[in-house]
Image (cartoon, rainbow, N blue to C red):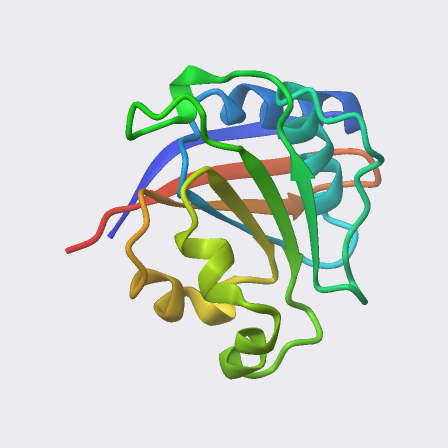
Length: 165
């Protein structure tokens, strides 16, 4: 069962980034965020807003051929640490699963380590096809961010939280 947290229409890239920045405020260590939407819907733009919140200075690009880009969070965000361990090294991992057809392929890049390491927040573009696999892990929350193209610049962003039964 999914609970809708927010549904917003944005008029431009800056507004999409702002929605992402505000969403980032609720994220915690060991959360998974699935970014769902067609090509060009704004998944990577959304990630740039996440990066803004976490003060990530590197250029955010979709890891289409690399499968994953990892970014160190250099600022202390006590709100995302769930086990009161402020010495954790926090990371944002940004996956692009567009070219992945079978979840078993992800074991070669160490998917379990990414998902189960304390301090990681994992974002998966094209991750809906593996939702059932993600549910099996011992994680904090799963969020689904659905991005829909309304026009050249406008997007509808629906953010849902998956509630495990």
